[in-house]
Image 1 (cartoon, helix red, strand yellow):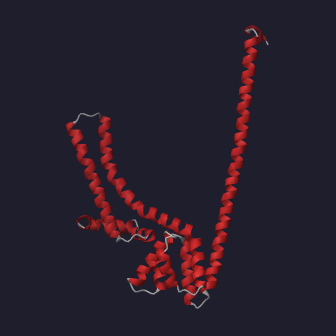
Image 2 (spheres, helix red, strand yellow; image 1 turned 90 degrees about the horizontal axis):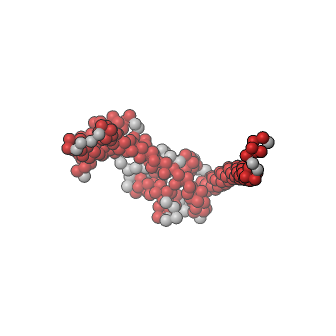
Image 3 (cartoon, one colour; image 1 turned 30 degrees about the horizontal axis):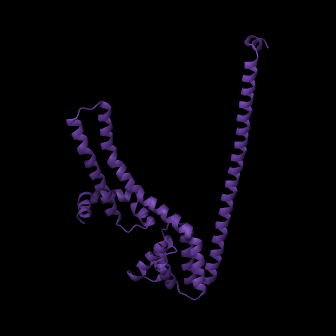
Length: 263
């Protein structure tokens, strides 16, 4: 890990200030990335510095050894200036992109996870056993990763399942999944009927998903009707235009020019 050590030695102080300014810790936690925020920013700064050197050296060689126009020189200098900035900006945006992917994946699989978990709870399985099963299921992808994160807190850090679930979902980008799991832990701790809670929430999620599909279908049908109307009007307009043009051309070809002008 020489590269990581170099990044910390060179940029640790600056990385701490930038991580606090851009709130990188929250973005990394929402994205589910297992990396220390200061280390992430330090590596981003070192990567930007490496890109800067990789662009600067050939640019200086080209400017000193080759005869180029002024426009090309300005382009090269702008490339040297903007390349490290773009590299660092990409590193800053990467946690947000991963958080968005995490949210969309969990949101897609959530109704099927709820149906599966409700059936398992109805069968008498504990939440820890359900998490272990989901962590090994290939049917799910995003939910499986969340279950694996929960198992890390349980098996490595020695936390109870409720605390582990709360630690994983507390800053989760999918608000529906976060509210669902936090509601489950509260219901279990207060002695409520968790099976009934899961069944009710499963029904609500499926109804919300069906309503969303209906709205999308209605929106698509409206766009389709608009497309058909525009297509028909444009077709009729083009047909009338060419029909009139052909009629005028035929009439002009069959009559003297002077007669057409006087008429």
